Image (cartoon, rainbow, N blue to C red):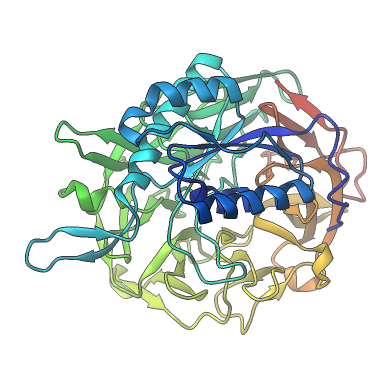
Length: 521
């Protein structure tokens, strides 16, 4: 992976980011994570204290130094979350952001009173109240403008690893590009108002979108998994207000069986703790995979920070939620289809950088493996192209690595020099043929924010990966898809609600070369 100077932000690719928080100190983290090219506007409900304002001033100055633009000081609404709706709507209209950062609407508990059962949290109530109001305002703004508004909600607790960062409540989508039976591509991304979709009218031809898929109350996260026929299935979380002032958060599922046609209605799967809404609202984001028989396996982190599992058989019958015992896990689960045809689960531990694995044992009982010989950076676990294997960034070095069950250690897949490393998860796609041999393809976001493309012989990542910078910026994780005929397509997201898509140049049989990048919508 190559690296550009931070000053080389492509002209016209800047984008507006709104950071909406209760007080200035709450904006320091989001501002510090912004990459060059962002135009940052901070909105605070209250002026906060002197120390918090000073910390935000320093963060904004540092952002400008690394290539961001700042729209002056924070805009202070001088109100609380319950009365902020109208003022916040006006601010979003004036800012007109493409991305928005706020807090977690459903924070995890930090304690339980043994006598009363009352939950305690490590953050003020206004954090969640603010996030709920901001999400509602963001949905309304997207509905009014018709443009996608991408939202990130950050948890308050920090996770172990470089930078000691806070985790995202809803993970970055990885495999959001899909190829249908006829080779037409579909792209799915989560936004403030729900999932938006783009699709090709003919393979390699004009695109339609973005269109908002039906689904009230969807939260800004999305998982796309493919069934054994290659059809995309969507999983998300849906939040519904209750009459008693609470909120139900449930796992939902939909599927697209024909490119360009409406997907199925969102089906609720509930959650492992849905009988008590205060516990149920803490459910983690789902992970899912299909086994060789066509059964869909769904996993979530439950209220107790262990794992719960639900399975849909090929005839559409769902099992109840089943609790899998084991160590406490974080909000980072990845399900994979293994070589034995069943499904296995990887999860990052809650309090360390270790990764745990669950696999089906004799009689269908789940077994836990705590001896995996690697540790992963938060937010980087992803399924590999090879059955049962995972990709991740090493917790210490940040290098992209591969591990499969039984291997004595992980295989590094990129250059050890720190200036060539990237960030975020890496997506994988199998089934590409080069000079008569099968290859697996990797796509990720390089250190310069551009899309990096790699390839290695199928099932042999230990032989090394050839990486290339494919000349397109990517805001968020890029994605790849391979059609039934083996044609590769790569997609990245640009500011302005645009996508870039490139297909492999089929005239170059001896190399992995992409054709020209085409803008979508």
